[in-house]
Image (cartoon, rainbow, N blue to C red):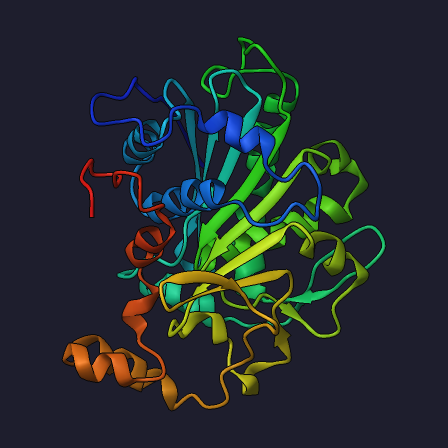
Length: 332
């Protein structure tokens, strides 16, 4: 197990992107029915995208967004033979009131990571009252770092600094947000279920404001437990129109389903979907989505699915409000 701690620095011009993102995170999702928040979506989507990088990069990007002087903690575990490649970042605001927990998604060049994604199970998730069946590979990666992640969240709950748990911050944890892109989104959703379904974690679960995922594949198998509705009220899944990953695992691999609120990007805006994305009917559509990556723009745009649409930079670009600079400091 690897744990790395780093403090974010103060941002320089033209940053920060937001003057007071902590206030936005504290104000949003005070109720389960408060709805999707565009600032929260951009903050969490950017964190999810850069979770593929190292601790210094995550801290830098969060600083540029306005979360300066934060504690950034990386918790990682890799076991090749067990197809475990689990990385989580925790970003604690300087005051201590907000923590973002972000899981890294599937690493493009890591074959073992892809094989873990293909380990569809099913496997029961052991909760206090129920044991819903979930994606075995995703769940194993959640469990690989779960205890260390829960220790960090407990520190935050007790008002300790994640940069140095021996010291205190001004306030204990008030608002917890979970996020992730791709596999990372599935891991965030599964951890939310674990927090809600185990009484021992009730104090942390009570601070969970929302879960925002981006390009998340399905992680639960029918029938959904009643707990799925409870967590689903706090889950906001973001999907670009032709991203194939949210339609996986395919139908022949199990009765996987999505839960929570789904928002699809179409015609330049995010819209609430009336029905969730369904499972891919045929594996034959996967090679076509990969080939579309290399096709001309016109041909790529005409394909039903395009793997390129799954890239996190596309999500970040579509989440950024038009009046804000990018995380690189320019305007598009």
